[in-house]
Image (cartoon, rainbow, N blue to C red; front, side, top):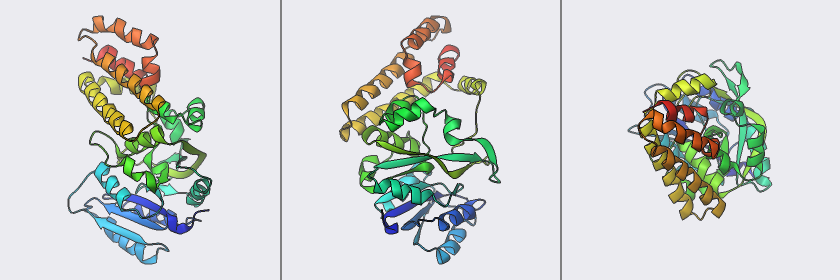
Length: 321
């Protein structure tokens, strides 16, 4: 079993006074305390830093607060927090969630059994912590078959289709940090971290809700459920050309990083398939009439089912310029 001195919690804050105290309280109530809490505050203009200072006076573990003089944004701020952690395990933490008391104890137990990185599920709740009736995995469509693949070491295949693991539910061995950083500009910090980890190490999943994932209308990344129609309508608002150019740039960045850290051959082959799918979509003609047969051909060959998030991607290609 890991000693408590080995687990660092990396938290980023920015104008988080509304919910921060509840999250800090949940960290203090962990049955297995962290070695430290590393907080990088992104130039908050409210009482966030004061709340952290007061908490640090009573916490039973070190609280190291770093204040950014200028706002870095979520990606760079989390990169900074990850770099500053001193523990042998790093657990990522949002400012507005609430962890159940046994979360770190369960994580420590799994790491003691040899895990490289871990994630858990979360109960999605509203601003008052009332359950919304579904979990985070249910919200993102991380179904049973996909979880089986993840357990078998094939999470990367699932990620080529859509993102299913939130950063706030993840912990990893600090020795993996160097292959994760720096985080490229086109990526959300947690999508990048999870993609690199999944492309190089086997995930150990804890199929339990070990935290509350709060929805309050101002989340940087939300967890509210969307319908099929919502996905389609959302796709209609997107510039197809701009989206595909950005997607290709992002996945090319991932391919270059994974190649540099000697990712397994099957990962690189799958990633090549993803890039090929994006290239074919980008080459569709401007005319919707001429484009439609190519879209249906890509459906038939399994491109959308393996490499795109949902039917919203098909709608994007059928209806958008």
